[in-house]
Structures are given as C-alpha cells and as structure tokens.
Image 1 (cartoon, rainbow, N blue to C red):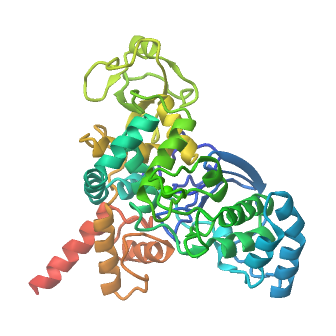
Image 2 (spheres, helix red, strand yellow; image 1 turned 90 degrees about the vertical axis):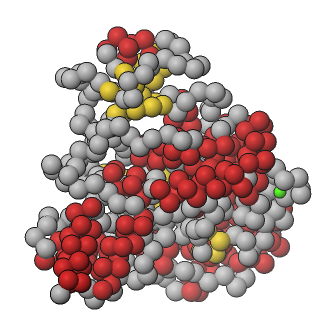
Length: 461
Ligand code: CA
C-alpha cells in the first residue's frame, strides 16, 4: 500500500491552538506544537503555502505566513519593554488596571523559544493512523476508565448539569493533557507577552495576554498556576485565557474558577464548552459505517449533512452491521459522511455532537480522536475497517520501545517519552535506510518489528 497516501477529507485549511494534528504534505500541513512533539496543547496551523488560519477554542483568526523557522533576529530586551509600555493603554481599555499591568510587566523578560515554536514547520508528515494510534491507545483507555471511576460522583453531577456524557468529558481531558499529566510548563504571561511583541498573530496573542491579566486581577488563579502550552492554553483541558473568561465555571463551589487545581471545575468547564458549542443530550457523535461498493463520496463532508433516510436509501449501514437508526435517532436526523483516509479506510457518519467536539479544536482528526476515545471508554471497540496502510501506527508504549532501540543504537533523541519528534523521526529514517525499509521517518509497526527481530538475533549470539 502507499504509505504516503494523501488525506484529503479530514481537514480543511484551518488550524488550532491546542492539539495534536496531523499533516497533509502537499495539501498544506498541520503542525502540532504541544510540547515540542505530539501531545498536549499547541498551536496547530494548516498551511496553504502562504496563508494560514488558526482556530482555538472556537475563535478563528487568520494570518499570513511570512517567517521561517530559522528566524533568529529578535529585538532586544529594551525593545520588549518598550513594546509592553506601548501596549499599556490597550490593556487598560480591555479592563486591566494600570497597577496590575505594571505589576505583571515590570520584570517580564521575553522567551524567544515560543517564537521558534510559532514558526516551527514539521519535517515529516503524519498520517491519521499514526495520529490516532498515539492518542487512543490501551494506556489512555485504561487511564481514562480509572479516572471515570475515581471522579464518578462529580462526573455524574457534570452530566446532569450540562447533558454531556462523562466519557466525552474525560476523553477531552485525556487528549488535552493526558488527564492532567501534561498541561504545559510555559509561564503564560511570559509566553503571551513575547508573542504579543514578536512574530505573527500579535493582535491575537495580545488579547490573550490581556485576558491572562484580567484572570489574575480577579484572583481566580495565581501567576504560579498560570503555566501552559507555549501558545497559552492552560489547565487540565487546555483552555485559552479568553475561553476561560467566557466559559470556565466554578463547580466545586469554592468561589473560584480553577481549571488548574480543581478537577471538578475543569471537567465542568469542558462540559460547559461542549454544551455551548451545541451538544445535543442523548445523541451520539456518530459511528463508523460501511458504504456500498462504488458509492461516490467525493462531495461528502461533515458540513454537508443529509438525513439518515437519505443514507439508508444509499445503502449505508453501520460498520458493525446493525441498523443506522437506533436510540434517539430518527430518519430525519442530519448526518455528514467523512472518510479521513478515503474510501478504503474507516468511514463515519457524524452528527451535531461531532461538530461540538470540533469546536474545541478545529480539526476533524482531533474530533475523531475525542469521539473514538469516548466510545472506547464506554466499552466500544476499535474501528472495524483497517486504515489503508501495510504499516499500522503504534501505541505510546510501542513508541517508547522504538525510542529505546534508537538510544541503544547510539542516537541522541532526548528522553524516552513516547512522543516522536523530529529527532526521533530523523533517527528512524536513518534506521529505515539501514534496514532496507521505506524511509518515512514514521514510528510504525514495521520499524518496530525490524528492531525486535534484530535484537532477538543479537540475543541468540
Ligand atoms: Ca472552584
């Protein structure tokens, strides 16, 4: 099979602050910036060559891409301070007091590493099966089931209050921060202050910078608590500061909206986000389907919804063979058909709730990861159809194993963390060349099998 199969249908040229995305080489690509590599939150752009649009927590902004990742020419520290001084009146008109602004900018120094992240362009493409196999693996399903049990009482209350199932809320938590394990180390004021004065999208980052100060001003969170992704998403479910202002709720009743230290507040705020994004209680996000041979799907999309009766008439069935219409669905329920890897991979009918998840982070791959993880947490099975590849993706445990092999082979790839960044991918590419495999740089099953085989041979000697 063609490993470089292009994925046309999953994503449009939008992007997002926040999540793991995968890329489409030649169709523009998505980048994930979350900790340098693959998990957590970040800024995700899709690039048409010169133009990118980004969308974070439902807010769209567009930008023109003019810089390259090799840009090093930052202005001096004194320029940074004068930039901050120039922003003062703007901050005040947005509701930040002069005293607060002065207090939090007085000793602020820039961190230009965030500009490198902003300008980062991935060297390698990531097909959707790699994206999903790292985000929805056994480890994350098991950890999520534990969290469901551990927080059962609060999740029941969240479900009653917002009408969003516990499994969906926990799936967002799992994908956004690995259930609170990885929520970001960048001091928000420093990161957003730097992004307000350098690089692309300054006006967007300025409003987030001011929002951060208003959060501090109200006293909901302290400066020490406000660490997050390089792009400013923070807390258990990685809200941007402006999203926090709009949608965060105090659910544990202590009078503070705390998405950093209060799991209850974070889970309820996430449910509130989804509810406000149009979640329909009691309805599914969608499900995998089978389509008749030869059915044309080129004009189908998430947005182009048609009634379930239409799909039944077309001969579409659930992938598990059961009837399309079940539960609260009816013949007139609108559903869009998506085929993230084309007609030869898994295909899905998606409803309004899929759009609500998409609102959290504007990428269909992301929404599918959340949706699928929520199903798995609910006892659901892996997709019925295989992805169109002969080199399937790996779990994070398998990725750690690949990284251990690479370290044994003498590569400097940093820590073994299951997150495959550019260093790991360059090393994998070299090893694929040595072993006579296609040099994709992917941490797939083939390179893992080759490493295991080689290691077993060495043990025999
Ligand atoms: Ca609270």
